[in-house]
Length: 162
Image (tube, rainbow, N blue to C red; front, side, top):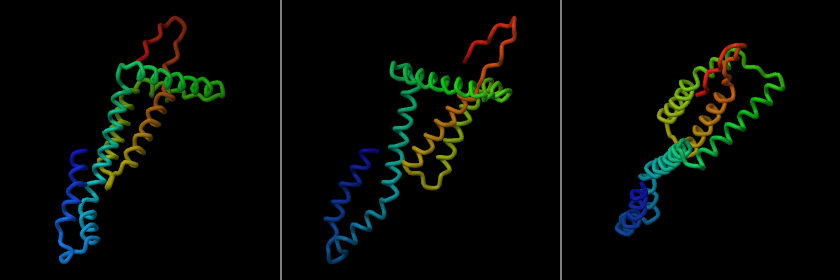
């Protein structure tokens, strides 16, 4: 990708130097070249941002100390919000139990929906990729926030968390 972007920049100079001014004025040749490669450059930027988002996501799901600490901090923050919401009277009831039981499927569904939105977006840009990534993070945080393990009745053993 970087090689292609560099090649487009170098070829622009070569093209502009090769076109005689009597055939096509320099400004017109520059506008013509820029118009032709505009969508290619926009696509390169979009792929760059998408690559960075995917790399960050892969890093954050890994086993590095930074990733584990970040995930632990986010889980602690969501737990703190859950506790505050419960003390304010917010109860999820059977919805929270259902979300907890289907967390994995809901997470996969959220990622698939974000990917489909990106694929079917008519002209995605880097901003669109970042927007979809932020919306996906919000959806995943909501899934974590709403999910509640089923209440343990006296005499029962609690199921391990996933």
